[in-house]
Length: 253
Image (cartoon, rainbow, N blue to C red):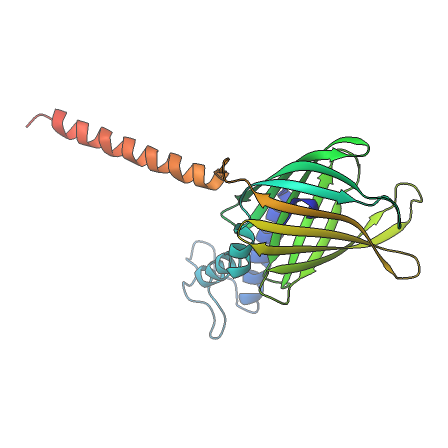
């Protein structure tokens, strides 16, 4: 998923934990309370999941899947060639930029940091992209240093994630009215991606406003935060093992 489609808050944790608590509450509904000091039953009522099973169900529901792996293929540094049209029929302007795409949260999401230029000057933006297995839709949030609004989009794909079509709405800063738009992300091959952005006019017609061609920059590989964490954990375990071996050799016999 591209950067131009462009965190995790306590509200999400509350929602997950709240759902877990409610699920357990419903599972135990109708069951008489135990007297004080008496341990609760280990098994749930017949036909209803127990606490451990409920936790495992929630854990499994949050695991990344094939569509997350598809998004993960974009990890790396990309050179971006941008073509923009400021108005229908207006001459195109071209510029160059870079995008760094990094897996996060165990591969559940992709972050994208974009730097480039526009007719109005230097430009920086950031996206958080993912796939919601519960809704069956791709999701993307985008912010940049030329806007005070957050763009939220949802998307679908008919070819296993190779081409993702997003739709969303944003407030037009000039008219203060809602403006609908459509973004198309296409993974051409492992080293090429194409992004297109369309605006819906009042009469319903689509007008292309931007196209970005991404080419992978193999000279600057990116190590995600999760990969780095795994490496640090491995180094820690090796250090702990070395300390244990040293203690054994120093223990009096």
